[in-house]
Length: 522
Image (cartoon, rainbow, N blue to C red; front, side, top):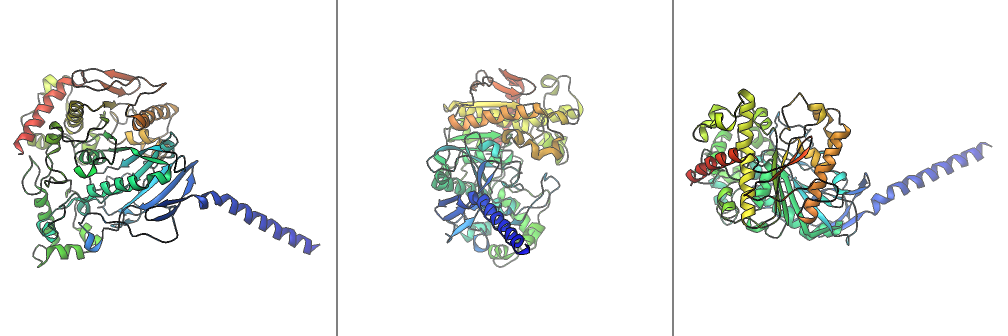
């Protein structure tokens, strides 16, 4: 009897093992063949996902501050079940998520596909994360969304070099490889990721002929820089810029001042002096020989490294390039949110007198902002100058070259945040676009059905734009195309409203001020 029970027990164990193997088999069969080898994916919420895919070689050692290099092919099937490392970045109190493993070996991307079929030819959406060019990651839950993929697109989230690793320039580094681009290594990483998409996305069911790049804050700045880079031509076919502070205001230039910003090289020289290696016989070799931790230890909260104008990759100020029609002619979406000044508040103040003094004469507050005072006034001016003016200039410039343009303004505040913040905070729109509100409970509180409805609407607009270059579709309020004459903007708030001449007087005023500043930077 005991022998029979033992055999039955062994049989149950055997059947259980077979069942568990069968349950895991879908993941083991999800193998994609790309140009560098085979990848094994997995399924999350009915969407096939491949995480941590290297799109360039590790930019370490001699390749630090050099253009991205090809991936070394691998043998066998490489598991793609976990995210890669977070790109090396300084610690900051501004991060809203927990950093994972941090490394300079971080040039990876993630692919979410609803139809793992090389013949599917689905539109592709490539998200470029923000974080002031110094922080952030393409690996976080807010960005990696099966809900976007379920709408019939392949979603790709990428990483790129950040802070001093991605954007530092120094005369010694430039001289060590004078035939290579100086600075802008993070932008070159984004180009490498888009080239990877062109070569490989069909293996995941994506259409390399229908690629949309989109991002928020510095990610939108990356989008807007990619729009003027000769090397990115043909790598994408639509672009979405969410809350970009980059588009007209002067930015860092390698070897001369740009408006109120120091040159890129001046920032690099000062940083190397702070590291204590400025007297080294071979500064470039010394810097490349330092550890990641040693370099990051020298970086303070106020040290900022951003894209630089070096004459080739970025030939001039973005404001001039767009006005001159030098950008790629693709369907374009741009806009911001109702409390962009939360960005300024989070880093120690909004529209301060010191900041205002850098921008020229005092703002005509009584005429442009009647009835506002104190923080409410400062916040409104900050948002107008830093984001909305840039967005308007970009929209006007894109329309001037004949590109379809759609402009938005998001004012819907999650119900749990009402009374706690005066509007939609900078970056709050991301979780709506991605339909990842459930990952934001710690920030937004309880998520309501109405929150989810608005997220579904916003996400549907974005996905439809990626599919066709036009966000309109059945069951959604009509979103008219933007043109400078009517300045029509779609506001998504408690109601969806189309505004004509949206903020026209304020935008005209600030555009003139910004353009005067831009002219003075030359």
